[in-house]
Amino acid sequence: MRLQAWDRILFVECGDGWIAEECWRRAARAYVFGVDRSSRQVAAARQLRQVPGKLEFDTWDGSRLPVPDSGFDRVMARCVPVAPGDAAALMREVQRALTPDGDAYLLHAVSDAAHLGRSLARAGLTDLRELGRSDDRSRMLTRARAGLR
Image (cartoon, rainbow, N blue to C red; front, side):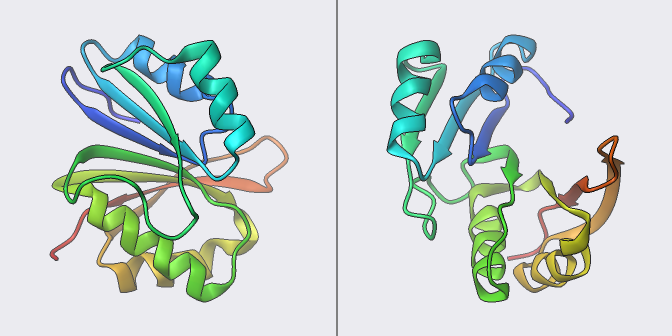
């Protein structure tokens, strides 16, 4: 993920916040916000990692991200298996959260790539690019750019 000073970075399905914390440590003066549907994971992230005003965590309902429109320069989403309509809704939320020149990074199953690509396009995210695959070739990282709203 491209990181710059002063970036605002959102992690969707951040778990206990470990990866969000690592990103925050590497991005000078960045603000990192992680959300997860599990209140247990968010409680752990807050206890272990939260730095108010710099690295924060919250729960979300799986449909509407608790963030402002155009509030983040980068969104990193761990895509869990979802129904086609749910993937499209999540991608619309990612697009809504991104600044007009922002980037989305999506970690997903290789088997979901075509379906996810269609959901990204419908949400207005453009310039899709595969960045890498896991060692076992089952997961891949895709980058998409915020498109016109």
